[in-house]
Image 1 (cartoon, rainbow over the protein chains, first blue to last red):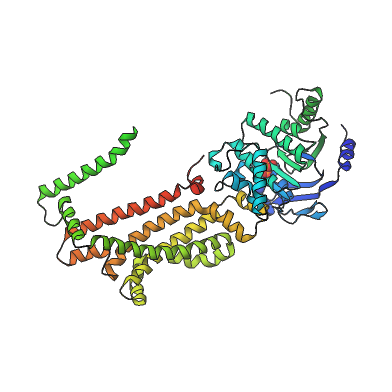
Image 2 (cartoon, rainbow over the protein chains, first blue to last red):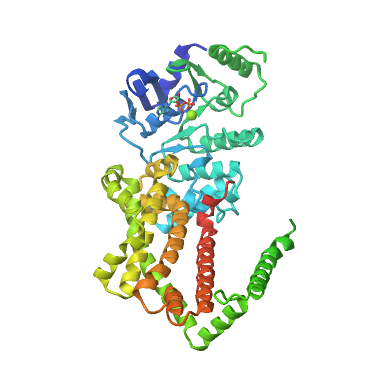
Amino acid sequence: MSNQAVQARTTALETRLRVANLNVTFGEGEKAVNVLQNITLEVGAGEFVCLLGPSGCGKSTLLNVLGGFLKPDSGEVVIDGKPVLGPDPRRIFVFQERGVFPWMTVEGNIGFGLFRLTKEEQARRIFYYVNLVGLSGFEKAYPHELSGGMKQRVEVARALAVNPDVLFLDEPFGALDSITRLIMRRELLRIWQKERKTVLFVTHDIDESIQLADRVLVMSTRPATIQRVVDIDIDHPRDISSRHYLDLRDQIFEQIGLAHKV
Amino acid sequence: MKRWQSRISPFLTAVLLLAAWHAAVVWTHTRIFPGPVQVLAGLKDLAGRDLLAGYVRDSLLRVSAGYLAAVALGLPLGLMLGGSPTAAAALNPPIQIMRPISPLAWIPLAIIWFGVGSGAAVFLIFLASVFPIIVATIDAVRSIPPVFRNAGQNFGLPSAMLLRKVIFPAALPQILVGLRIALGIAWLVVVAAEMIAVDSGLGYLIIDSRNAGQRYDLVVAGMLLIGIVGVILDSIMRRIETLKSVRWGFCND
Ligand SMILES: Nc1ncnc2c1ncn2[C@@H]1O[C@H](COP(=O)(O)OP(=O)(O)O)[C@@H](O)[C@H]1O
Ligand SMILES: [Mg+2]
């Protein structure tokens, strides 16, 4: 599909996040590494966008800038009309399973961001999100007693429980085995369809991006630019053996410069 | 090795060592080193004179006082310095210079300041344990993975709450290791402190038994008691490390 179609589709949604001419360089002088170069992108409210690129290209760096954890050297990030100055509970960052607090139970983790609410409301939300991610019965368990997939669900539930507008997910399923990964993708889609958060999902897995996203932003190697935007116009649940799916997959493979044969 | 074997082998070793000790003393007809039988008799003698429990208690009280004071100062200070690079840079030189000074070097000053008595001993124990606690706490806070801090900040916690709910528990496993080592040092020092400054406790027992009548059976009894109490203290600290809220820091799964 053409880039015009992409534009048309995003302008139909209210813009939630806008990034203009973002540049990030690590180090100084001789050792300076230009990691992000002139990144410009827009994400609509409720949209699911994947940032796809090879390892080390700067995906985490970009997501950290969007999340407010890292100041860019130039350019700006605007969310809901306001420049991003730091992390904010309306926009939650989901790290790989490493982000779950190992000293807290499942309940404690999921309720972590709810300290402003009354005890009753906290309990209600914890109950709801424990169920939503299928962890009932494990409320009192500690993370080291859980599998990788369960820990990941705890982190997603902790993020959702504060009812954020935006979720940033940095290769959240990267450390999981391939079966758990598939299940987690389905769960995430189910939750997204139910709650309609704006999602920015970083991955280096081409199939993962096509299975999940409304749009895939393909990033180049360092210094990372957005090489191409691919609109995934397939309804959920997606048939991953359909002609169209395979066409999109081929396009992205070609874009990244990989042959079809191993 | 089978389970029962690993349970039994420490007892076997102990019995063998005691037997070897006994045999060595009997065969050499030594008069200056007591055998296990004499040491046991010495312990009975002490207990009979109602001194044993009192000495152990006094030593433990001094260690508790000095050590708890060191925790009360060292822990908050370490947390603060670990979280603030500027404060740490400013206070680092004095801390690093004080750290390698053996607590025993402080004995003269301790006696001038606190007189000959429990105060001096407690002060020495405090000095011996406070630096390891400060340093271990700073290191523990510094080595918290940034992901925990970021996650904490992301949910908008005020800084006091961030400290209480994220920084402190994230650093706690490593802090506990430091606390355990510091307690070991405190116990090591109580004996030395009691040799110079007080008239009760296990250190006093050792020095007094030698001075008053060459009771080497009591000297060795005192040494054994110190070792046994030390092991008990250490195992209590290790027990704390198995609590669920800190165990994550001690296993790799
Ligand atoms: N804090 C940093 N200081 C210096 N270099 C960094 C830093 N963070 C990331 N980099 C470098 O920036 C590049 C992009 O890193 P990253 O964003 O983590 O890539 P990705 O997430 O796409 O794998 C890498 O070459 C990495 O070494
Ligand atoms: Mg990354």
